[in-house]
Length: 411
Image (tube, rainbow, N blue to C red; front, side, top):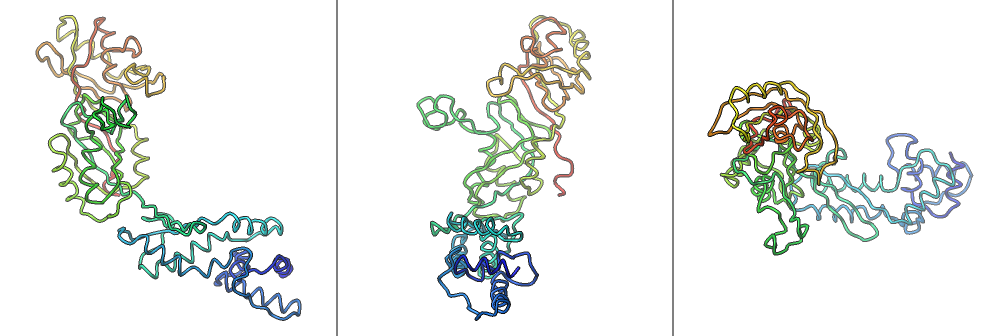
């Protein structure tokens, strides 16, 4: 090992931090600076030469970056003032020349146990920031990430999103689940959209996010739903599971019940929510991948006058059936053209209303209900229209039950 130390010192002056870091996995309980100083002393003893301590200001690897730890710690602490958080992590963007210098040593000398410069900088500045602010370092799940940009002498702050989970109800038809950019101007603003950049005046996402944006001083809210209902459908019954992601929140602490009340006061009477728990990014992924069953109540128009008994007989043939559905024409512009197989778990006729038929359908996640009735020009088979041999269509659709993630509110 001392032969390696000798070879390293021949490259030029190097600080104790950088020397020790090249042997970072050797021994325990030492800082890199202590390790480097010890190696320098051992080298002098082994080669019977005068001990020469490192002379400040001459390190060819880091340019004495580690002497600036207090400066960067104060800079980082100042950057997160006013941002509510308990945990943080430090990241360092190392100038290219520094990175190349240490990588040259690793490569030339085939070093086995080096620690990158930025790792030591992250750790040492992190300890100093913790001492200054009383906050805790948490590399796995930080609420704030503080990036030290050494070359530009600045600090960049990234705030972790805040998440909450619940169910929403949509009482008004004609509202999309999420914001849609204007089709004509792609969100830039034009006469067609009255220079709002939006295809629709509002959305479930915007209505739910309005109060939390103010409460958490957040840039925006992004709704992650367990599927989505059509714009012309309402979402009633037990509501649709969702996670709301509040991006760049300056505040994080708030009572969940008070948050629910604030959202309902703001979104009433178009949308309502029941909040169940605070959440996280992992839950979003689980929610998106969960293919829960859904229950619909639909009002169906059939072109020819057909008896209720005939409709009931036709509907019974769909109970338990597996349906082949090619991507519907109405969504083919934004979804892959595939044939999907979905099951009708249960279906029944609830009654007749002014010449229309009220049905309730329990379907596997991803089952297109409108096309189950109309057949979509043969793209969905079997369908109610196909079985009846007359045109049929959904004129009103209500979503009344969407399965969520089990016990999510207890986590």
